[in-house]
Image (cartoon, rainbow, N blue to C red; front, top):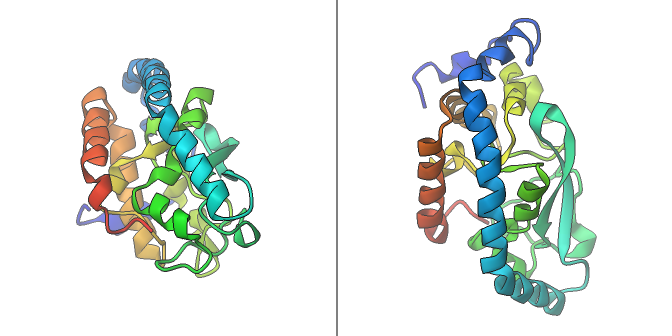
Length: 230
């Protein structure tokens, strides 16, 4: 994180998606954003075909492990703050699901099923987001979207840092620059959000094919040993 990371939380000029937002939506990235959308569709479709047997096996495992639906949908905000339903494999007991994520998941969370803990350990619960990528809600790489109810000590995330809203200038991702740099898990304190936001804004300003390939490659290489996944 940069030495002046706390300073990134100044108030944007003319609103989060106004003058300050235009700097993050610089037209030099417009061509890459269009190309990236095409690549997202191609890669997501390929992954869906390759992983289809695994998706079926996970679905069967969920049904055998506990009662309830196979998928869990939660409302998040995407490009320009537009709400969308983000899908995951269900990892909690059906009666314990928190649609608004007011209570964030914790390590050794009793709400998580036995099979769900395995899915979370290897981030397999995120695989249904391939469908979100195909629909255009998400990208393979981008800032991770938070649930509507996510808060820190009762404060909504944009209340803690106005520049949080600048994350909406790009599609959210299945993985991101903050995540591969070790910033995932519970947002317990304000500084947890600021650390991640610093990485998110760096990504938005410097997004490119090479950076996306780097993030995707690091994700694949580290997912099996990520201690922050639970």
